[in-house]
Image (tube, rainbow, N blue to C red; front, top):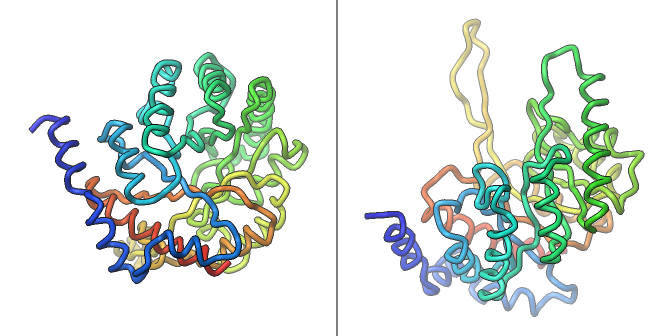
Length: 315
């Protein structure tokens, strides 16, 4: 079976009745539409991250996302992404057209931009043409231990240069709060990086997974408080801690493992309520980062979206 046949098979496997079955199984017998109608506040819009659907052509991803019920795409436009930066001028308009044909929109891009260059400008020019107003920037590595002050200064210079370029095209560059060997590796580090830049020129991209890992029981909430003026994007995903054996001296080792929104350590309802309290009224991106076959990612994404509607109904 070739790639096209495989994609068609997956498309056929995710018919509307399958999504309805999953919605009922998830405990929302009235479906998403009933939850939206029953809430006095407008339900936030939701897009879905496309990284783990990249084996499918964008039009088929749009068809699947439409059946799930989300509002649009968080489209990967970076090396190894759904669209390579060198092809963005031709391929991003085609992707936007496919989204429109399915009643969706490209709500944001996940890019690899870390500094101004030709591909960065191509992406920004095309976003301006298509009215895509927010992009996630790429990652800055922490580097060797002992060099953090200088590394932070270097990242500030690069961010300032990206901000100046993006301003020419009316696109807001947003910095993702990550964890591990990246900058920023916490909401507090992001605040330190952008505190002198105006919120209309750079955005903070919150993440329930990474901010819970680095922020524990209360640090993520304090970081959201600090970042309030800059909050421009919010990713939702969850995790569990998993034992991985013991080290040479007997120390238990642990790692994180992605799981359904409702099954993880990050308190999704509390996190979203805090973001809402901070004044954010924008859309959310559903990060279904399951390292699984596409068909299983579709099932879990559907389940997560249904759960998310229940969370929104409690705001």
